[in-house]
Every structure is written in structure tokens, then in C-alpha cells.
Amino acid sequence: MKPILILIGKLAAFLAAAYALQHYDLVAEYWYVGPAFGTVVLVWHARTIRDLVSAPSLGFLGASTLIYAVVAWIIMESDSVIPEIPEVFDAGFLGVMIGTALLPVAHGALLGASWGRVKIAIPCLYLTWYALALSGLFDLDITLINSMSVWQGLYLLFMFSPKPGFLERK
Image (cartoon, rainbow, N blue to C red; front, side, top):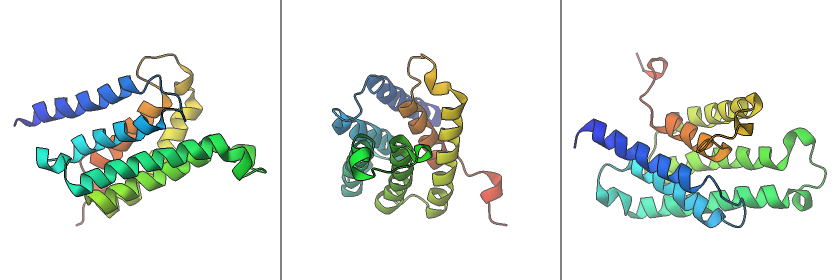
């Protein structure tokens, strides 16, 4: 298949998930946030239809669901779990920090993503997401742009973009 058609299909999967998740309720609907984004990652990762339904892919889909469930639980239960949490490290901060570390690790462990890319993606994803949050981007009322879709777009960028030149071995 032509590379441009494959890219269009991958972007369509991301936009469909962003559209579906723009009105999610953090905890009540975590059961579809994890699978929705896990599916997008699988679409971006898969080279064949068989790749989409392989045991590692299904394992990643389960891991994505559980990771988002943990993030949602941390955000909703943070006062009872960590009663004296400093304001700088609020529940959203901790949830994003943990999810940002766990999903790329699951991607590496279950789908064979490069560990070098995983090690670079985690801090880059974390820093750019928080820079955008501090910029006020998430306060704007723009369709398809919310903190969830931005995080997912950054994840896809850092995990699937072509290797930058500074990472090339000489």
C-alpha cells in the first residue's frame, strides 16, 4: 500500500479517538479511554492486520486499559492515598507522571519498541505536555484539542516519528 494512504489511515485513527474522547468522564469512562488509545497505538505500530490481533497486541491493549485505570484512580483517590501531597505534585501531576512512564515501557516490553526511543520519549513527552499545559493551551475551547488528545498526539510523535539525526550512531 502507498505510504501516504497508510499515513492518512493512521491519522484518521488518531482523530477518531480524539473525537470520541473529547467528552470523556475521567473515572466513569476509563474503561474506553485506555482501549481507545491502545488501539490507536496498535494501528500506528502494526504492519499487517495479523499484527493488530496478535497476543502482544492484545496484551498491550490490556496494559493500556490498566495503565489509564491506575492514572484515573490516582487522580480520584489521591487525597485518601497521599493525604499530605504538596500542591506542586497534585493528583493530575502524579497520574500523568506515572502513566507517561508506564505506557512507553509497556510499548517496549510488549510490542518491541526500541528501548532507546522509550528512554527518550518519556522525558520528552512529560516536559512538552507540561509546557503546553502551562502555556494555557488546555484552557482554550477548541474542538479535538484537550489534554488527552494532546498527550496522545505527543506520544505518537515521540514513539513513531523518524529517528532524529542526533540519535544516529556514527
